[in-house]
Amino acid sequence: MDGGAHLNFYGSMSNDQGHLKIGGVDAVELAETYGTPLFVYDVSLIRERARGFLGTFEKMGVNAQVAYASKAFSSVAMYQLAAQEGLSLDVVSGGELYTALKAGFPAEKIHFHGNNKSPAEIEMAFDAKIGCIVIDNFYEIGLVKSIAESRSQEMHVLLRVTPGIEAHTHDYITTGQEDSKFGFDLKNGQADEAIQQLSEHRYVRVLGLHCHIGSQIFETIAFKFAAEALIQKMIQWKDTYAHTSTVLNLGGGFGIRYTDEDQPLNPSVYVEEMVGIVRKLSEESGYPLPEIWIEPGRSLVGDAGTTLYTVGSNKTVPSVREYLAVDGGMSDNIRPALYGAKYDAVLANKLDEPRSFNYTIAGKCCESGDKLIDRISLPEASPGDILAIFCTGAYGYSMASNYNRLPRPAVVFVEDGKHQLVIRRETYEDLLLNDLPFTMTERGDRIEKA
Image (tube, rainbow, N blue to C red; front, side):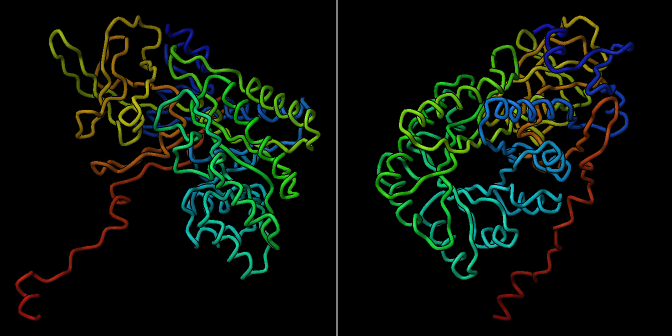
């Protein structure tokens, strides 16, 4: 991909100094101000995506909720931005729920996911009076029923099901096929048993069905098949159990462009196809058109994020490759090592120079597999240059670790030429916050006392 095409796609551009601009801000200035590694989010792109999803539903005249799948990137500021844009929220842990509540996110628009919610997490959801718990298994049915009964408190739920639809994506991020740790199987009777256990419960109200068929999906046919399978099950339940579902949640997984190999659809296309098939099936069967929920995560924040690194050492392996090392790596972006994920990048301070050198971008972690980009053409790089890797807004910071005792990076939001620190950089002192000194006596002393 040539630099101009890439930058046009991601809403970035070169300034008079030949530097990359993100959200109207000089990327080199950001690196100098906040240090590196640094996650930079272009807020305008997140707003644009959110409005695209919501606006398409509104234009098609369908009641809907667009819930941000916050596992992609969660923080107080991100939750507040999602609330500003009228999004609902998908959380998958007590920590994400706690953060959302501290951010002031409306509890009634929070949906709690996860395949192994603890009793304490479910109690927390009841305390907050969240909008919906997505029940994943029979164990959770028992927990939710028991807690609701002990409190005499109503809770809305969705039943997560696996529709047997396999999306074309990486095996590790495909979750809708029959062999999955998530949800009740739609074909072997598990889902039917689940609705029987809950359909007439005094406090637990089943709104409908939920599925999630995978991630980084570039076509709509799998969503159409999944919608058809769920609608047919809802029709069957109406006839068999007199239960009418009012919500159909088709999950997320909409793909984004990481490199030229990726050809994602406009978000509106996914919505239009989903609404079209659900509306058609509802009209044909006489089933009341359900409210449609979706859960975009990566497609809201993925290509809005750019990670800035400072170039350090380099190593030439004659006739093989040249390594260019940066001051981050798998500790702030595990996806290349975990999934073989591919990215594009530029030297932010040499944007206008020809990309005539071929490099492998290596991280600084003590792992031979710590490579952020296998091969990429860049201008000749020197220590101190700023490397910008695009489309790191999803599952970068949220999956970051302190491997090798590396502090997690800072996160900055930029919009219309302004920038704001929203997560401060961890310090070495932060790394020791939970450490305690060793106070046990020597082994010999313990034996004598015993």
